[in-house]
Image (tube, rainbow, N blue to C red; front, side, top):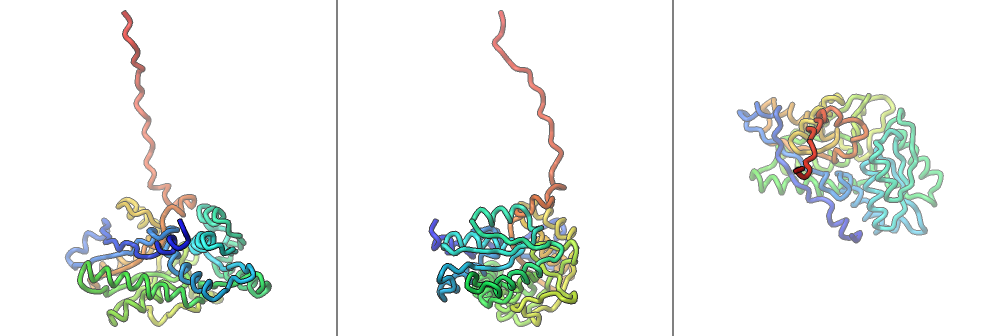
Length: 326
């Protein structure tokens, strides 16, 4: 597949309507819950959208002249997108990633030939961001720091892409727009870009941000709020109407419920859907939209799916049948 074909496959992901066992009691309220299935992107996550947009703009601006490497920090999913598109476009990539990123993500990044710099997992995502900034400042001739936490093209990708797609698809499905949007903060790009676009269509849109516990946390989401936490520069906090705390186990339990319905997604997806169901139960909203940011295949080694595995059944013993003896 050519780089052009790969880039053309980013976005235009399905908008699926969710029906979970927990949602059965909501029918009287007429609540409908929709989610963008972002695992349908080429690398399997929503991060393809901003990474493709940021890379395309960087190439236009000649950022990689003289063999400079693309540098950024990532919890893993953006790293995969950087590595994949970098390999397709011939752009060398260096990624700073916490050492506790799942084995699946680290191996996928390495498979595309990207250089990995691992940071102390106890220091979290912010330490990876600090290390990327240090490398960029110490070796400016070697690296161009994409900085997804401060890059306006991150927001633009979701404003022009994800948010517009949600509105177009909902107009076709229900003839209207959502009155509630649920997401969370990693870089702040998806929440900011999508919420801005949806609120233009519906000024009374309620925006809820899912906030994980500081430990063990939820992959891809920043809790924020603690002294010293780095707030992404592109996050527009004025868009957020409500913050919903989410324990890791609640997110994982919802992932398992989604898997039982045929949707294999990661923990941030479970967190978003769990929060959306809580909001649906209030009866205040008729159309809620959220995101399913990544495939669940990136979290197998983390043990998310062990509880779903049924006990194997022993095959019935059979007696070989041979030719009859006379």
